[in-house]
Length: 89
Image (cartoon, rainbow, N blue to C red; front, side):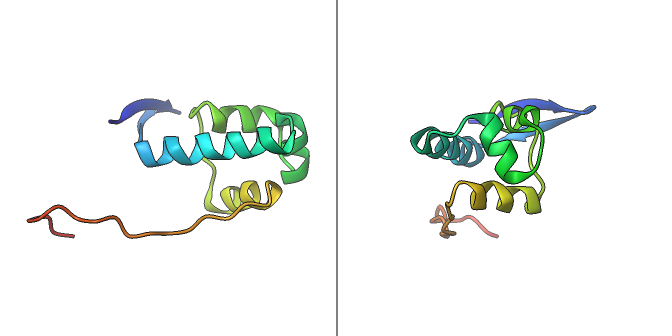
């Protein structure tokens, strides 16, 4: 399932994978007891940007995404998804 987001003037597609990832990062932030303001301070950005990421209104750059992970002392693991029979890459 995908939902469309407005990002500047172009709609953005929000995939289930991205929603799951952001939900997980929000859960980690809450487990660590960090507010959005504290996380923003650790990353070096505005708290409003954290809010926009967590509400799927903005997508962080690759660098800022890594900063987000580092600030939460988290890491991601890349796994190949299984392909349906007949699918090509």
